[in-house]
Image 1 (tube, rainbow over the protein chains, first blue to last red):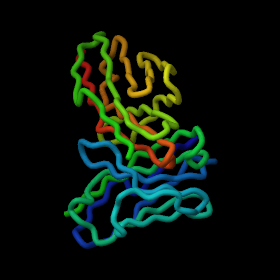
Image 2 (cartoon, helix red, strand yellow):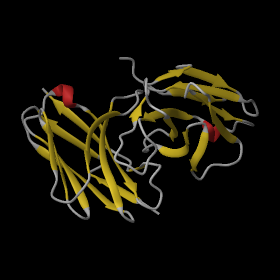
Image 3 (cartoon, rainbow over the protein chains, first blue to last red):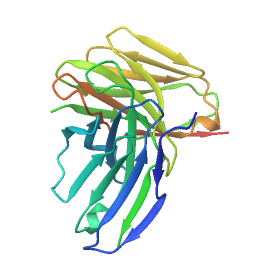
Length: 115
Length: 111
């Protein structure tokens, strides 16, 4: 079975530009979460979506937005990129919305570099 | 706010030299404590979930334990392929939709 997939693998943008990152969850999983991981730190929670609804948002500015599609795939959008947005962006999927005993499985990530 | 602290930051081991990693946490109503392994430039790989104090889980050379304030990841007779960053995360009752991670422990095992 395929795991969580993310695209693109790497991305280079300049300050002020916009970026869209994509994620496909494990088949049968209905919840997708997004995390940002800066080098040397643990992942930081950005969003969680379940059944196309936002169920949680971390401490990130409004430049960050996301959505989930009917097939449970998801997009993360970041506007007006800053140098500090350079990071590994991770997508995780789980079978049920958090609140029960589920486990989040991570994709390989998208490495974003902002110049 | 959930807090997770991992120690040490880095650990260098000789092949076969057993050791333990620590994860201290503060959370309101623990729903689960998770251990992940992360290789450089890759996404975290799930290892274990622990739900209540006293629980233990094992996988090959790894064993995870949980108390009310901390978790340990024991590595028995490590091999070079066990070299990675090990991440600990908690899922709390108040904000149970997210994982709160520690900064990780980077383990290097020399042959």
